[in-house]
Every structure is written in C-alpha cells, then in structure tokens.
Amino acid sequence: MSITLVSMQEADFSRFAQRALDEYATGMVAAGEWLPEQASLQAAEVFRQLLPQGRLSTHNHLWRALCAGRAVGELWIAERQVGSRRIAFILDLYIEPIERRRGYARQTLLAGESAAREWGCDEMRLHVFGHNQGARRLYELLGYEVASLTMSKPLP
Image (cartoon, helix red, strand yellow):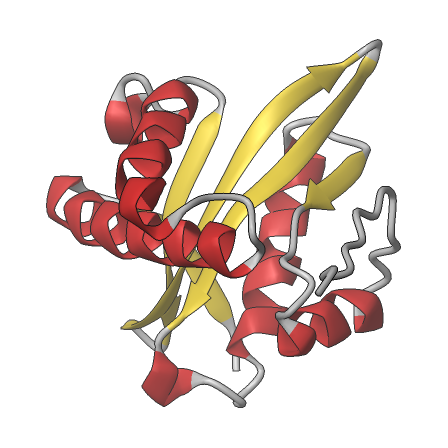
C-alpha cells in the first residue's frame, strides 16, 4: 500500500473546507473553547486567517491522499518559520470513514513528512484534541511527543 499526495483542485478544496470547518468547530466546542452558537463563525475566521487565498495560500500544502488512484483522505500542512528553524505544521489529516483502520493515516503522515524534508523543514508539529485518543496513539507510534499540554477539570 502506497499513498500518493496530489494537490487539491478547487472542487476538492470546497469539499475539504466545509468538512474541515465543521470538524474544527465541533472539536473546539467539545474541548470547551467555543460556544456552539459561535463555533461556525469562529472556525470560518480562523480558516480565513490561515488560508487568505484559499487553496492557493502561500506556504500551505493541501493534498488529496490517493491509494491506487482512489481518494482515501486529505492532508493540509503549512510551512512556518520559528526563529531560525523551518517547521512543517500539520493542520488537518483526514481519512474517509470507510477507509479507516487500514494504515492510510500512517502512510499519509509519512508522505507528508517526506515532503516537509524536501522543503528543508527539520521538524513536524501538530495539534490534537485531547479526546481524540486514536489520533494521539497514532502520532505517538510515529514518534511525536507532547510539546505543550493544556489540561482542564470541571468544577461542579
């Protein structure tokens, strides 16, 4: 099984943006960061800031992940400068529900890491919601470590 990353076209980007916006808003509500009634607008504003020219925004790479020519998911990586270091930040990894548990997420991440090395990046970073245990396990298996951690406790 081999994953190929192919740049999103406009129709791909439109589908990606709607799905990613909805998931991001839902994740931020579940994390207690945003109120449900404001989440969609807040998510749209974040995306406008991160992708001011949509899929053509500089230093952003938006791909469809293909296996044997079949779309199995999507990957969004942004190149960032942190001091003198160049890093790649994974902003979204998505595998179609019907394609999950087949190793596509792992292979997509490894393909993204390979691309980041070609751009001269020396580190990958990402954010994962604490409640997303499956993603956290995958990232840890691939060598990602906690760089910062926010914890919460409800007060009755």
